[in-house]
Length: 344
Length: 85
Image 1: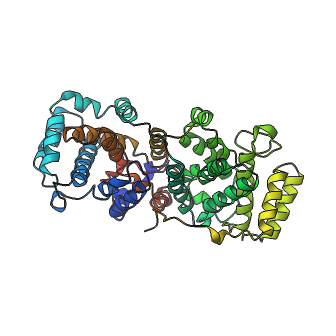
Image 2: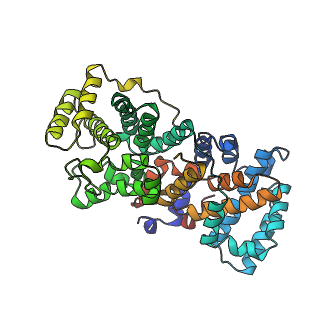
Image 3: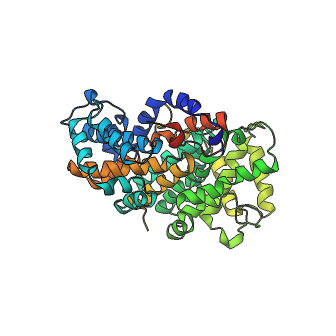
């Protein structure tokens, strides 16, 4: 969808304007993943030519290895997979000033094997190679929250109408979890779940997210799919059964009377953590501007939520906790922002 | 049960797959980086991961939106057409 309409010239023109940005932004994202944070420079330098690199530094050599792999990958995607083409690729790499001698030598060695050329174009082999060599090191709460921050900012930057949407819901959900006596560890899990509750919106067309008028039935269908996309991205049923916190965010458009989506869950199927994120989402959404309306006052928003509680859509206990927080001066300006990697 | 690094990277893989369609390219670079890195004495895990994530910056929503505004759709980048480097 969409890709078919784009000429190669369109794509190249667009990409050439942001070439540097994707390396810089990528480096900022990697710096937030503790497992590989020290390699953020590798991502930033992955388009550098050899003259700009220090061959005695591991990170510079790694960056150049990736540059070389990137070059070979593009040539394989664009070109025919023949012996003649493979020989051309090997010749280009061997004679290019873009690459360090160490990187060229390593490539010469691996490219001598026919198995390499068959493996590198076989999708199943590539996925298995990737998946099997991933280490399973446990993530601390800080690691998890840091990943949540990246995914949250990615979601919020998508539209000017949601710049602080997820951040506020996460903040409020954590406060509500603490008020509901869920304990600190569980409250932090709710915090993470709220950060990724709208993750699927990264795939929602911007024309629908920012449409100034009412959505048509078809557009509403596409918009509501963001929940299902979130479900797929977090790993589907298997992941949700293993880590229950993953379904708390995915439940945020369900309603206690079964009238919500995507599955029409009701009552006992919706645990307290899901109810917290559900209500936080409604409150924050009502108080924010949308393309088709201005944000409502806190009082008007609470009135609407009170009616939804009376109608059996939202949880009364969580609503009481929200009302208490508002009475005590709930203030979103108290949110401590971490640096958004997507804003230069 | 706690999340682990493998689950985190597989989540990022599915995200790349959903939004950017550069997953095949990312896997190719991960594979080549890993085996070249092993020749050079680097960690297999780290070269695999950093090669895979080298283009993660293309998930920048501002850029994704530009493509969607120009060409429509929700799932946009495709290195096969773009020739992104």
